[in-house]
Length: 108
Image 1: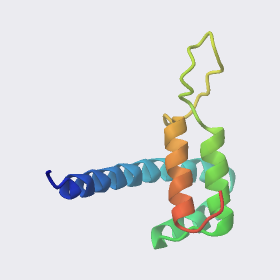
Image 2: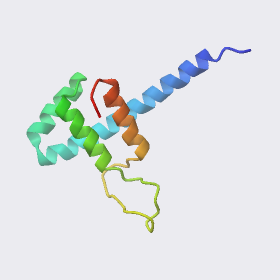
Image 3: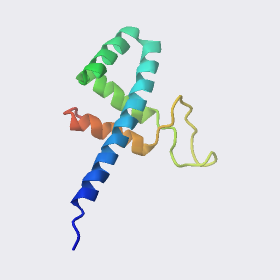
Image 4: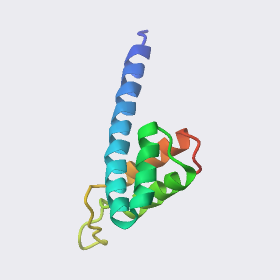
């Protein structure tokens, strides 16, 4: 019987890096949109993001934003609504962001 722990650890590391890239991509889009509507809130959230700790309000805003901005629903144009946005966001991306927030103690 072979030991797959190394392979499993490697895969987990790859998944974590991919999740982090997804979160970074979506946080950047969220901050850009927030800045257009509320510069002060965007500055506060960006500062917190750069420190590595979003406030509860910022975390909730991000969770709500990513849920509302899902652009890739899996429906064809005839089956469902098209949501225009600056970035492609899948339901899996939303779950990644929500999981990332939960892992940092934010209720989502």
